[in-house]
Image (cartoon, rainbow over all chains, first blue to last red; front, side):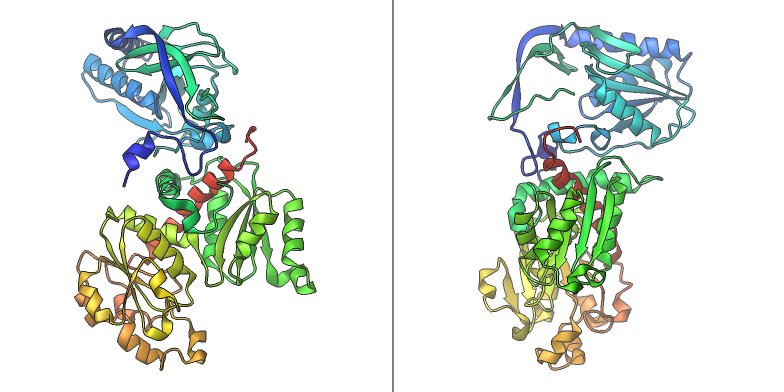
Length: 203
Length: 308
């Protein structure tokens, strides 16, 4: 099976839009900067929650998962204990599945969220629509004591009343730009269509 | 892809995308509240012009787990009995505002005809002797779910190949995925141009069993007896049924599958039904999961570009 490859791609047979490619223009943060920002965010999470009791870290597929894992690892080092960790795919909670036919990942939620402080982690906060979907998804798994939001990059242009609690980097952008985040760094660039009819992945 | 009519339309990419999506749907199905809002506000009509319990309830359960509204239509209690044509019936249902139509019909090709008339997505839930693509997809998913690699997998499909839409779709799906398919049946139950199918043929189940990784038993339809295609059901069971002795010839790691409903004592001996290799109930559970994936992908990719 070619699942591993497929998981990184958009639907082809069931896709509505062509493929697109990110073209980097400026490096905003390098790998060390990202590591430092993640460590600082981890300290802020410990401080805000007076430790890690009842804290669960949840990464949003796909970009948020490596960020969440890095934060969870940092938290475990800071407090010298294990941290509950899960991942959520918000595909089934979107208000616009047709604009971005990405194949869903398997949600992995081995822990209850009821009476927990949930820290949602994502790579980029943009319109806020992904986070809105994620709030619906999380509450399907129980009733958390609180839900907090950690993002590596806040690029502005919110369309919903959603704000982050922990931010790696505030990055003013124009709507036409794209941001790529990984543990190797943060880059600003543009997304261009490989085939005609491509729509930009805004969320 | 607006419709799901045959496995050939899907190709390998389409099958793989459904399998990957079904993994995510399996997680949803395992939740305490197995329901997500993916198709909220969408209406799915199920139009069954032929009897079915498991396919119909499976599709309905799948649609409901995705929060779609389900509109039920059964030919026996409809204006079809007053002589309404298929086209008029479909146009009437579509005028009520449906996003997907699930069609089962005794005539081969009826779903494709409906797909040409309808703007809504059409899903083939079995047409005549032609195709039953969601059955093949759930069977492929069941095998994949066991961690089996299709490349070089030996699948034996046993029984009435000639009248079986399940056989036809499964041959397409399994061979597309790279399996070696062997059809096992008496000559009277093989279709006329069997050599055109992507499968080899054997008339001896005993010869095939030791090399079989997946034994797929088809339902022996009693109505075939009238046509004298087999001497008797007892005779069929003796030559092509899975008896306890034959089960011993089958490798310990093999899987035994059946699309249901099973005829105990014909395709399979009652003693073998509880064999640990039997995956019939997994097939049923996976049916819901795979149909969730199909509905999600087909309806999602047919949405008019705007907000869902």
